[in-house]
Image 1 (cartoon, rainbow, N blue to C red):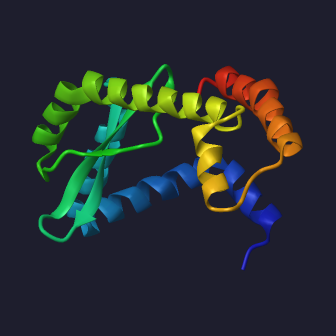
Image 2: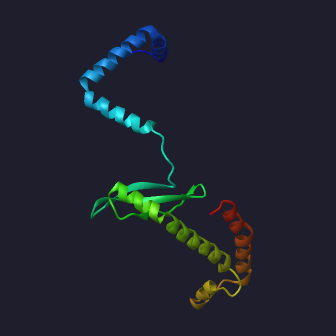
Image 3: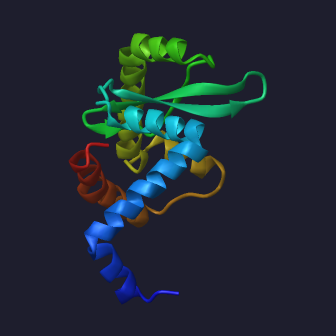
Length: 166
């Protein structure tokens, strides 16, 4: 068994090493031609430039079809945290679905997300309908705590979310 320094010295000796590498390469090609072809195909796929489409597709298991493609979109340079089912196990159909429904799904998501920000802003306001529900359940929030929570939401949490563009 060689030590690390001996192994490094053997690697640095390029003349003998190059000859051995060529012999090993020829033996591998001779013994496993199908594996070498498969590796060359994978290498070729990885070398081709990828085109940006604004979405990514993922295969997820499905009891009925075996697997189904789900689409995840990117918007303003960020990937949206939700994914939508394309209802197909055919890649071309999934890409067509993703392209056709991109604008609609992103606009629906951003609209519902903006509604969530409005809900957060209004939650701890005075006479909030959300706090009234707690009063009806006999769990009222005292005015001091409500005001404190409201200030934290408006002065810290909402500016943080808008800065991070959530």
